[in-house]
Image (cartoon, rainbow, N blue to C red):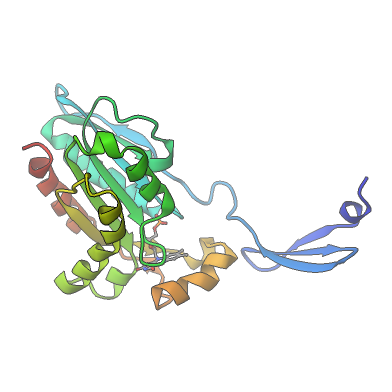
Length: 223
Ligand SMILES: Cc1cc2nc3c(=O)[nH]c(=O)nc-3n(C[C@H](O)[C@H](O)[C@H](O)COP(=O)(O)O)c2cc1C
């Protein structure tokens, strides 16, 4: 047996931090959130009546709150008679059979998460032939949610729009998100105030605004 491992002891030092004591000294590292703390929802929202086909809402998320935004979007989209899959972007392997796709992500460092970027790049060919909309959730809009602020946040998607110009989002939604500092891993707790410019926390999701935007998509994505 490895003598270092044999003498290793771990202590939870406050939420999210692990102190490891070994024969070689002490190390502090961030603990991953405990299993069960975070849920990344995936579900299929059925069409209320006979289905006209399937749509997809694919999302990327660090702490799960964007999943409920994705479900809210799906619940509006299905009202036009479509069955809507809500899936983590990283779990989608094919867009076969979808009539429209909504792609969204929480913001990290004023950008979409890599899983959302990868999704668009991987499926660029299929997406270029489908009606598509993008959305982003962030804390910037928790402080001020008006047209100017939303324009600024929407511009965070310029890199992916420039990198994959053949995919043309017909609409881009920008929404205030949610953040619980207690659930965050240490590196994120340190990084968040630096990259976001504040350390605001709380649930600022405005589901009325999200539903209003999604209601508009019912026409935008089907005409
Ligand atoms: C590491 C980290 C970086 C973030 N960076 C930004 C940022 O640059 N701008 C911003 O407005 N919000 C930022 N946020 C806030 C999240 O985008 C927001 O809380 C979002 O709703 C989280 O969604 P999720 O629970 O699906 O991950 C950041 C959050 C974390 C944890």
